[in-house]
Image 1 (spheres, rainbow, N blue to C red):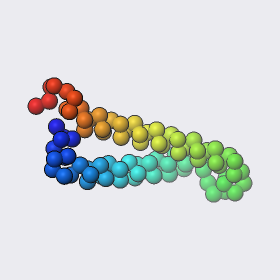
Image 2 (image 1 turned 135 degrees about the horizontal axis):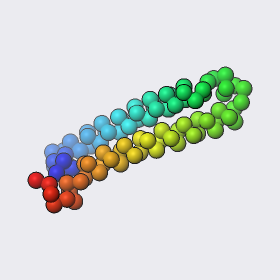
Image 3 (image 1 turned 120 degrees about the vertical axis):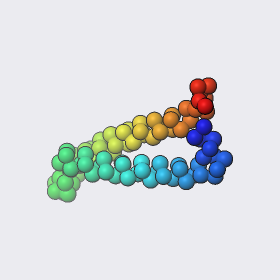
Length: 88
């Protein structure tokens, strides 16, 4: 129902942009926090570039996975009534 209402009211794109913005903000926050907690520093980057790259790649992959899982749940909720007979 929500998907159909957003689509027919012309607000679907606005809603999706909001989700995208929130996802980008969440990813940025997660990356900064994970990097801080795992000791990623400019000093590490200068002293051992390969270790820093590996650490950052791992952090980026973890943050992406968390954000993608959240987005998947949002879209499941958005589309759930479209495929369910129990919706009003």
